[in-house]
Length: 524
Image (cartoon, rainbow, N blue to C red; front, side, top):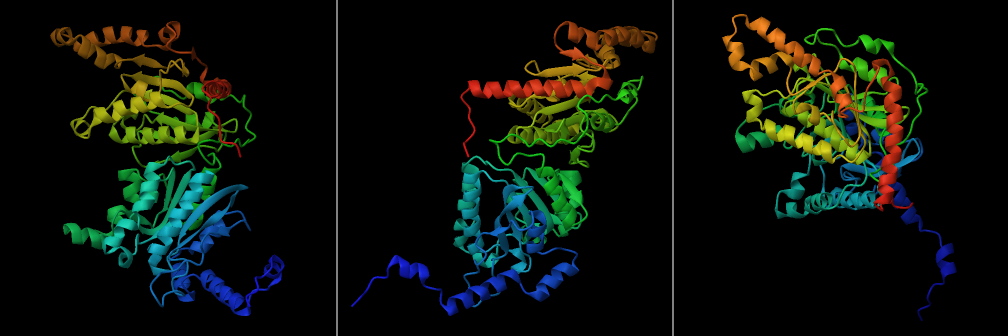
């Protein structure tokens, strides 16, 4: 006769010894990753293991594994593939909940199997629904060839990629490349991307490139740190090792909200909000052709030691990044006069648009320091779709819903002023007394506007000097302020307190505007 177990029986019945033994065995195997020899090999290469990286990323004692017992579906490989090449889970960073993915190079070179693909898809669903930020600690050979060499490839990444494209991403993504990494969709998807100097990443490995095209290339010439930091701009920072990369991710995350519905965290630095810097009055050289380092202006205005530069070796005529003003996170773009005179081209436009995207998603105000002689109209740049790049930049700048504050330090010529957010009637535009605002610089303006007279003049230099002086006087900021194109001409020394007060007003304005539109953050 069958007797149904009562709830009391179920609750008091102890697990069998065999079950507990098996659990202990599987936990032990998972904790050992790919085994002591492969762990040692990782250490000999100067790299941390996936588990060590995850533990360093997260606050102590907060890590929660997600699917740690997943393994390859190939019979006989259960103990050798525990985790299936990827450690996934949750934890806290500075008390905030996050998710993480850490490639386990001790398991099949961290290549992704079918089991880890299914687990990652479920993990991403949880992350999206919860609005949690995600950290990727990436190393490995992309998808496992044995799992995708046939038509099974259609179901391997397809659903995951479809989900990522079809649904708006809610949580921030911060990525570190910590070794060889191929097929890096998550890397390009990152809001912040750092890689170690010995690392590389690319869509395909050198053997695949050679098979497809006949080209022989090293992994580093294909996608090394120098390539991505100087040529492609697909990496925001290069650091020496794993520890530095993880520390950088934690630092950058302290500037970001967890998702697009939260406000960025406020971190007071102890720097007085009303601090002035008299040295800024002498920063701009008297001669317009002389250069200076715009980073001195940025660092003098923002909270001390808070400026984190992004893509420092890419499109160096422009510096950009994030910083704090009175503890509040802001995005920064600034022209660097010492490189190509700070002019805009296709690459610098790409750099600016990246910061605009970060400001929009992370709800960061944009602060521009402007000294731009215009767009660089070379044949090469025109052939690279210069008009599309610069015009698109202007459109993105107008569409950015976050507060935009600009300070014109010196030159603000042509369409570049609009691309740099230097004349936004909806927000706040300031200028230093040294500002020159015009369609083109005085001397080129004379040679173009009075071309026939200039060519006919006996003393061409005297002709240019005569008319250029009047253009220069008309380009001073007083006209812009008089006609209400500028909100104010300010003392350079007082730039910091003026921007901080303007941002305080902008935050109230943004908050009230969102309330009037019926916009409301999801309730916890």
